[in-house]
Image 1: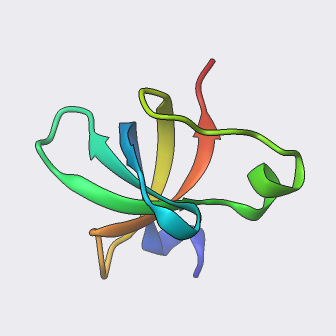
Image 2: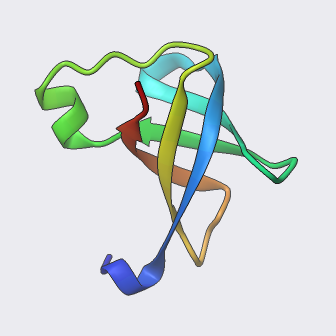
Image 3: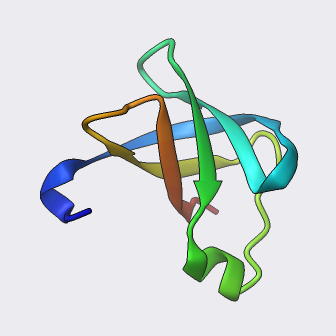
Length: 73
């Protein structure tokens, strides 16, 4: 997957699902997305909890799934 195939948006974590997945509501849209944290976030032990504002990378072919690439402080 290259950078040309992705869309970067911001959202708020609504619910923590099992298996390291999160349900994220996109800001500005009433859309819920299932997302997982990226490998660097797992490597550096960055915790994500409900209510956190995050940046998500969506695939343009399946925008209902994404990867969390940044957690805002």
